Image 1 (spheres, one colour):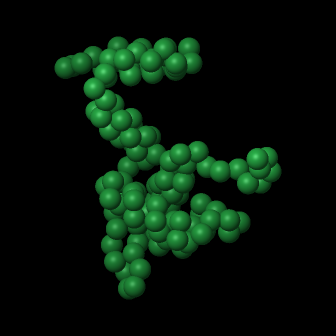
Image 2: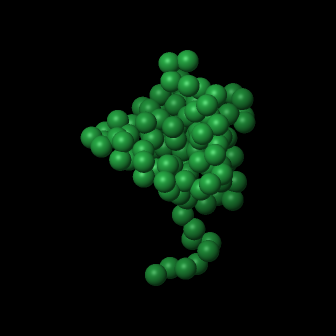
Image 3: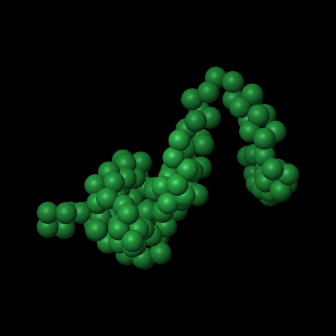
Length: 128
């Protein structure tokens, strides 16, 4: 088992979130090389990993893409929180026991997250 802290991997969705954040903060469309330089200025991220992730984000309609010469430029359409919420919704919609999933989800929340969820539900009642 490798315990070298320099070999730490990003959490699931971490690269997508980092790329979306870089695009949002840039405030303009960027090439994959520009995205890579912002996300990993130390050069520890391959160009192909950035292109693959940008392509996935484009399929998810999370980024715009326009051709520029032989490459593309990408711009953010959503923020990382939107993407996580979309994944959560898709997972929930794929479940037959939605009540059980939600019950377990809420039961596993930290106290402060449960309180936040309750406040959000009070502010946004269903059908309101």
